[in-house]
Image (cartoon, rainbow, N blue to C red):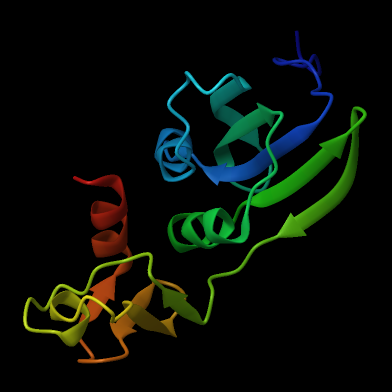
Length: 156
């Protein structure tokens, strides 16, 4: 059993590897994948990893991630590796990083902030610290921790 693939290779699509254990379902939610989109999908949780101890892996056949999706993933799981697969071969392998500026993806916690009251204002946060994550609103300097970001993005 050791050394065997749990899930077969995919023909075309994305493999997200090195996901901290327990975060695969959150990443699927951030990518807007509910299961009825028609993608062939594999989610493996709590797989042994030399580097991480335990990790999750997602394989999505028929989908390549967009920039905004990668930014969302980087905010909650900056350790992931994104592999783009074509014709059963990895053609691109990307380490991701937390974006320096996060626009339009998060809501400022300050209800008086202009980003919450001006319909034309787009929320914008700058990264103050990557690990543990700490970002601040570019308008009012209200801060969000990594935990706050996960709660907001997951809707919890």
